[in-house]
Structure formats: C-alpha cells, structure tokens
Image (cartoon, rainbow, N blue to C red; front, side, top):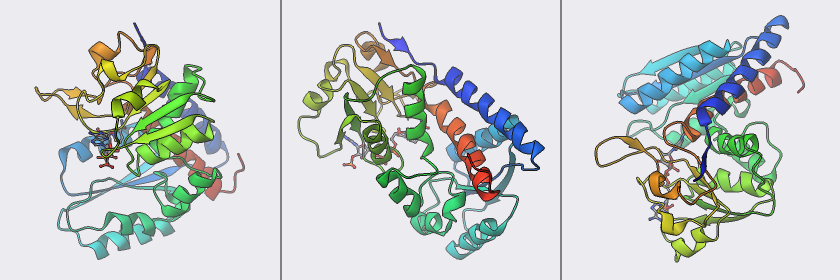
Amino acid sequence: MAKRIDGKAIAAKVRAQVACTVAALAEKGVKPGLAVVIVGDDPASRTYVNNKKKACAEAGIYSEEYALPAQTTQRELMELVARLNEKRDIHGILVQSPLPKGLDEEAVVEAINPEKDVDAFHPSNVGRIMIGNYHFLPCTPAGVIELLRSEQIEIAGKNCVVIGRSNIVGKPMAMLLLHNNGTVTICHSKTKDLKEICKNADILVAAVGKPKFVTADMVKPGAVVIDVGMDRDENGKLCGDVDFANVEKIASYITPVPGGVGPMTIAMLLRNTVTAAKRQCGIVE
Ligand code: NAP
C-alpha cells in the first residue's frame, strides 16, 4: 500500500515558514503585497481567489482584490495591470485564469512586470526557467517538487514521466524534474504507447484533466504517483487524474485529491510573493 503524501501538512509547514519570513521582513519595514485580479463570475475562480486571499492574511501578506465584471474590455484590464505594475505596496500580481472569452490572456500576462509575476507565466520568467536561472517557479510544479523533497524522494537518475504538456503545469513540471536530474518523458494526447511509457516511470506525474485517467495497469509497482488533476467524477465529486483506490495498492507514494498537490499551489504562491517583495526592496536572499 502506498504512503499517502500529505500535501495539506507539507503546505502548512511552507506557510508557517513564509509567515516567519514575513514577520522578519516587517522588522525591516517591508510588507509583501499581492494583487489578485478576477474577471467575471466563474465560481471555481471565485473559490481560488478567496482561498488565496485567506492564505495571504494568515501569512501576514497584504492583499488587494480587483473583481471586474465579465464585460471588462482588454484595454481596461491592461490599464489595471499597468497601474499595479507601478504600485509600490504591491509586489506580486496574479490574474486569475481563465479569463472570460474575448480577453487575450497571453497579452495580459505579458503586460505584467516580470518582477511581479508571481505565477511565473511571463515569457521572460518561462525563459529563465528553461535555462535554469530563475527567481520564481510556477506554483503547481514547484509545489510538486516540494512534496517530493519533503518525502526525501530522490529525483536524480529516475525515469520521470509527465502526462500533459500545458504551459502552466506539464511543460514547467518536466523542466523542473530535468533540473533535478530526472530523465524526463513528456506525454500528451498524441503519444503512442502511453501505457508502456507510464509503466516505465519511477515518478509519474499526471496533469491531464481527466478523472481517473491513470489506471493501475499503467503504473509500475513501487512508483511514485503525483496527481495534479482537479476533476469531477460521475457524481460531481472532486477527484484527480489517477484511479486512486487501485493505484494506491501498487505505488510506493501517492498524492490524494483533495489534499495533495492542491494545497501546495497556494503555499508556493505565498513564497513567490515574499521572494518578489524581497527582490523589489533590495533584500538579498
Ligand atoms: P490542460 O491545459 O487541459 O492540459 C492537459 C494536457 O493533457 C494536454 O497537454 C493534453 O494533451 C493532455 N492530454 C489530454 N488527453 C490526453 C490523453 N488521452 N493522453 C495523454 N495526454 C492527454 O490542463 P492543465 O491546465 O495542465 O491542467 C491539468 C489538470 O491539472 C486539470 O485537472 C487541472 O484542473 C489541474 N490543475 C491543478 C492545479 C492544482 O493546484 N492542483 C493547478 C493547475 C491545474 P495535448 O497537449 O496533446 O492536448
């Protein structure tokens, strides 16, 4: 039976560390600030934004919410980002995705000052990650690495398979595993022999967005299985990309959904916000 990696507990530790750093920064007169922009009334986005604000408050990070109506124009949104780029008390800017149809998300991300890009989605930060000289890491993949590190799971030399190649999860996930000396294979919807490739993985990361997509016959006995998915099963219940009940029986480690990768994403966002504040205030790490 696999050991369940307790993302909630590990995230709580990271958040406590962040709170300590925030307290130390306060003595230097620095209060990290995060602006969260939400456009429209997508209920899932609203929940994410509320959770982020609450986590900021708990860690002592100042946060501002900008809730804009779904009819907001590209120009209005770009103007807001430009204003936030100039705001001295704001060190991190997060624009909650997805944006309503008609708004150009890529242009918005590119308009964010890379020093305030705490999601690490700006092309300049993405490029930095590619060459391994980065200040911020995208929150979800960074959270996965933190989970592996917390459990002292060695990445170097391991066969790592990432299912999914999105810009926010799959691609940066693969890059971070590579930076940690894993031997990395990225799979996607056009991959042939997916099952065989997955069966060869020592570390298998699923970021597909399909409930219970990874079945036990795709997993090597003793593999570490990380489930990034946040899906709904046939009863509308939150579940991951992995058939947890069956894969748990053969993996060595597994992350549950909920309570695995999800809590780490917010914890890493807080950490990035503190890093951004330190950099903008000239405090060297
Ligand atoms: P996405 O942009 O939809 O990407 C999904 C990826 O899965 C694509 O690369 C796609 O391949 C691949 N894929 C789809 N069907 C496949 C198949 N049959 N075989 C192999 N690969 C297949 O999704 P995402 O934004 O990366 O998110 C993935 C999941 O993670 C979602 O459930 C999302 O909710 C969750 N998520 C969780 C967190 C968190 O904090 N826990 C954060 C972000 C995302 P193609 O490129 O060929 O289409």
